[in-house]
Length: 266
Image (tube, rainbow, N blue to C red; front, side, top):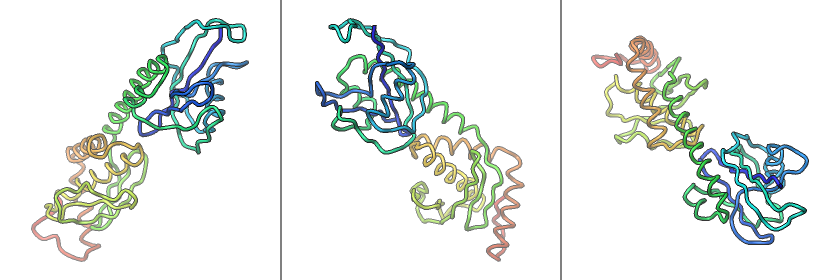
């Protein structure tokens, strides 16, 4: 019996890699091949290198189903078993082999429509469930993290979150929607009409939202916003935040050389 392997490759955006076959037949498939004098794990990594040229990957897990099928005699074998692995693409230039003409990164629905092999569609369904669950756990984990070492002098917001020291320029805007910040600049925006006591929580929200959306490629309006909202609420609920507000206020007043007046951060 031949042992075949397939690689269900996904990227940080949750898209799946499909290849367009041109050798012997035409259609779409995952990276696949047969096991030589090696383990199935070694074989799937080798096939990835040979068919796509990518090496910077992480083998996540072997997918549960093993598919058996019979066929005409191929090198002395009339039956095969196909195993599949979920693989995370971490970067690197694609260089297709002579077996394929092009490739696409697509969502689950598109991949299911394109794939020729029924077995590959089965692997896709299992892979999608795992990728979806991994993202759910990521969002849950990030939502429970806390901000530390918060500083704001009226111009720069600094804090530590997710093991990273974040530092952004804070810009006041007239619009109420403060989520339209630039992705390629270290800038966060806040509504200029906000009361002083509401500025710091909003800036923390925007800084966290920007960090997680860029680092983990999460959707800004839903996934990243959910995390930032949880972190902001935790910061406000923590009694220590009042002390932080006072420290921040003093630094802000000193930097801007002005009195706070009746309105304060606390």
